Image (tube, rainbow, N blue to C red; front, side, top):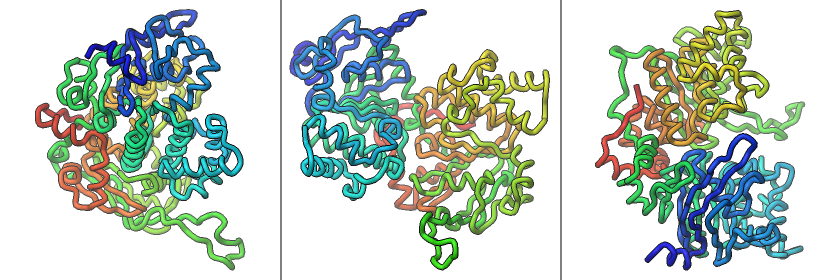
Length: 563
């Protein structure tokens, strides 16, 4: 069947679409000659890096193009109508009823000052006209439909009172309120733990199958595309370079760009058989000895202590050790205690019991702020979101040298030379030193964050989800950089991540946390190759793309990132 015949029967048919963004200086061709179709009941995934045009294509299908964007050629048909001729009034009728959107970030998409019930109710009232008790019943039905537990409670809560997975389900409920025929999911699970991610995607898949609606998944996660799509489209620089079934595209790619994406994707990497040794038993850098941490729950006691406060056990008897020059990965779902563990190691909180030993010499749990300060030169943190950790008013030079100034180590020309050496070390051009954070890409900002963390020449770096928001090729570059720096500087890493594919690519040892306790730990090859605990097995089974990755690894030589 020819492309025009397929498009004539499709719910969505795009033919030779071209979209340009115009500014005073230049015109950017964001979408260049794209043709695709989506049938009712079909799931299509568009995969590509930032700037590939996939989000612009989704904006066209929602009628939400930016003011400086213009469709300069081609056609877009939605349910048999020419969408390029829609007025804004017509688009308001189409959005929600014909096309629904699940945005990427629930905390941005949801109003923090409004209760969940009211936010869902506003959409239901607009698209269905429900009011009064009927409206209340419709809201509860929607929240129950998307698998949200205790919907009568959730309608009274605010977004910050829900978990990431619960907030994502609220967005799905809002998208389904108008009973759309096409659901666009824009990176719907990029910031979620693998088990929560699997539950959300399972639910979306079931809804699509049960209701017969079409779904378009916008993602940079090749594993999600492999597991969930009937067809995969790979976009680069505004064009579709390859498309087909997941098996055809991801197991036997024809285009060089698709092969490069697969080579860069952590899910397609195979852990090495054993961690890399240093020729002799590694020195111990950090050790947790039966560390526990309990937090008092607010509002559960009184100041006279006549009523004891209730506590939440964030960590319970955690023991682990970090070896010099190697990477220890801490994995687990949200609420497992990963962040609490980092805060204790950095001296930002005190444990309820247990000891944290640095280099067999310093008991970090006994130090006050003044006593901990000299040791901060040996322990540094690379945060999850570097943009949020930078002062937007400071240049990159000022951000990088801030630790050196704080400890009074260098000044004048020596400070300039050290800043230049640090950007060289993280493979950035020296020209970035004069720029502001907003002028850099996500990958460049992450390199700056690493350079700043290395300024004090630490022995141990804590990496908090360092690549979670990056495209797969940028992820691969950052992970390769970290491995190279570890080999060169013999620095140790503690990596906190919900992405087990990333962990498999870089970790020597792994600690699996669940509800504040260690359920399993050992060499990465053992944990991934033969996990002993059911919880670890469930985590690994939830990693998107594992099945196709395994099948592909039998035919393709694996690439190892570790030094």
